[in-house]
Every structure is written in structure tokens, then in C-alpha cells.
Length: 320
Image 1 (cartoon, rainbow, N blue to C red):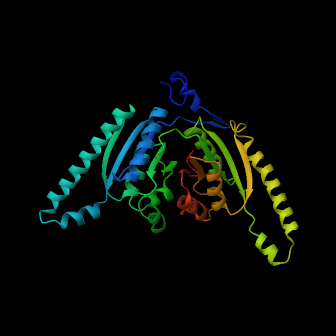
Image 2: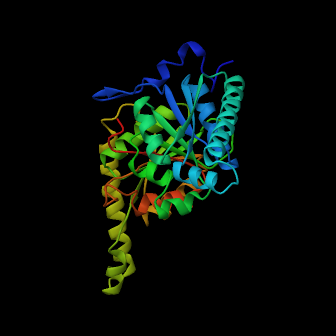
Image 3: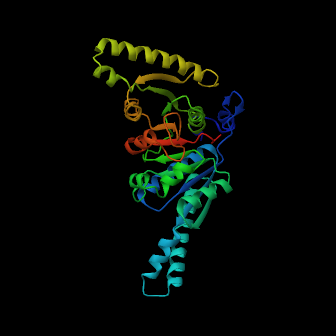
């Protein structure tokens, strides 16, 4: 049966959406990390469906933190090495059972791997070694939002991982239908547009530029009347629309993408527009002109991750 209404014989062609200067390559290797929690299960199922849709290999990983493993093993009244081995065997058996189930249910090749060490480092090393095209995580795990602020596990992978990373919140089994791409004219924004078309080739894609006006408050404080401020906003949005059209013009395939420029605080506006458009996927660069520190996700991205209620795809500047 055709997936997403596309006959199997035409599946490869739909991934070859050309951008001037290069051609997008198909997604062939998808990594998903699981801690066997319900939130991780959503990510695993989405990753498996994407592997089915793109005819990709699914890499199913579970990482056991070495220090925590040793601490737990030492707290039980038996030899620590015996306890550690028993825990590893249990996790490995559970992982293989899940891999077998996914391979049977979705008809995709699944490679399962139990890793030991620092979670984000092990995942990043595996992704590089296996030329992973897309990494998938659950939005919460044990405490995803806390991790983002405390700087552990998934957040460190999101900050430093080079592959596009999909953060899954929804358990909707359907392919993505409405995609919102937030751009700021940075190199990461161009790659975000490519990634959206690559991941969800059958979806309606809307490109959003938020026209942030940080001086409006100061203008009001200085006594500038509201009509003048509104005219200033209108002119800024008009200029931004021209810049957006020029930004998209060299990118083949964007002519059919809808687009808009809206004034407002970047993070809040992106979240509001995602809700208004009923987007099931938001795509944005991990770092761009709005992000000041290349080693951090940045305040805009961090707030969107925290507040968005649909899936989020983050793309690094060097992900091409």
C-alpha cells in the first residue's frame, strides 16, 4: 500500500528536492534513544514510522550511565559485578524485544545497541560513527525541561549534536501534515527549510519570520504616539517580507510554500503561530542570528522547546 499517497516506485524521487548548489540526500539512518518510559515510547513509534516512510534503518539505543549503574549495583546486598551484569542483561533483553517488535510492526530494519557511559556523549559518538541523518528523542524522558536548564542528557545532545534532532511530544500516528518553519535569515534557517521538506515532503509548509521590534517600548517611553509606532511596525514588516522573499527565492521548491511576517517577541510568536496554524511540526535552527552563544541552545530556542505542544525539529548550522 502506498505511504502518504505516493506509489512505492516514486518514493526515492520525492526526496530529491533540489536547492541551488546541492541536492538533498534521502534519510537513510534514524537514531532513537529510549529509557523505556511512556514519553520515550512516543519517540520510538514516531522514529519507526519515519523509518518506514523513508525506507530507512532504525537505530534503537539505550544508554546506561556508568556511574549510576555502579552506584545502584553497590547498594544491593550481592557482589556489585553480579548486580551490574544482571542489570545489563535485563536492559539488553528488553531492548532486543522492543527491536523485534518494531521490525515486525513497521517492516523496517532495526539495529539495537546497549551503550554504557555518559548518555549524551555515547549517543553523539554513535550518531557520528553510523552517519545518522536524524536523531529522535522523547520530549520529557525523566524530566526533559529540567534537563534543558540543568544541562544534562538530551539537552547536551541538543546543544552539541550536529544531526537534525526531532523532539517528539505528540502520540499522533499520522504523518506530519502542517509544518511551520521559523526563520531568521541565518544559515541554520536555510537548512531548517531543507530539513522540513526532507522530513515531511507531503506536508503543507509555512515559513514564518518574526519581526521583533525591541524599540517599541522605548518609543512609547519617549512619548511617540501609537500611530507613529504602528507605522514603524508596518514599515518593518514590509521590509522583512521583502527580505524573506529574497531569502527564499534562490531555494528551489519554496515557491509553493506559504509565508508570513509577524511582529512580536520571537519565542511567544512562534508558539502562538504554531497553535493558530495547528502545526504538528515546528522546525527551526538550533542557533542563528537570535542566538548569541554557539555553545547554547539560546533563549529563543529554549523557550520554544519549553512551551511548544507539538513536535519540534532542531537543525544545526553545519548539519548539511
